[in-house]
Image (cartoon, rainbow, N blue to C red):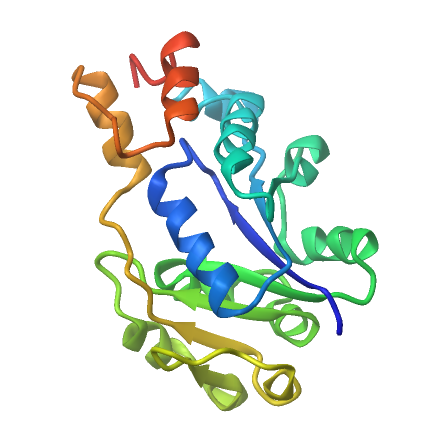
Length: 219
């Protein structure tokens, strides 16, 4: 059986418990062998406007992944040191995991913009998409955003369904309802600025890192 590898990209500024629980649910429902958390690279001049430095965000993801052996932090985009395009990231991952089924994991909000992505049609041909529920966004919104042939490639995952390889030939986009936590990185940063606790919002090791490195105090 071919290996199944999920790609979970984002700013992760910071990574929080909502990210971890969502990735865990995808891992189980799709029988993934691994989920790669891939923090995006942000140029230093943008970091100074409020985004934590790329290496700090990567380190927090590494700490957050410690509890699940099938989670791993990937430095692919941070190491590139430039704007990242999903199609390029996918090509790099495929060289690391040749022959594996690859899955892009993203929220319904991000999927609404899929047609603006570079080479999005080729991307959908070369990997599978798992589109998750996000607080404030319904999967029906993402469904309506699809046009033309893309709509024919969608599979709506039922509540108890386990996904088998028999679907991968005809379906490329999987809409997965999950029990999404109403947590956002924006809210975590706000609480840090105002001195409120972030306990239960981020993994303990991530909270310790944020405090010891004085992140988000003035942003």
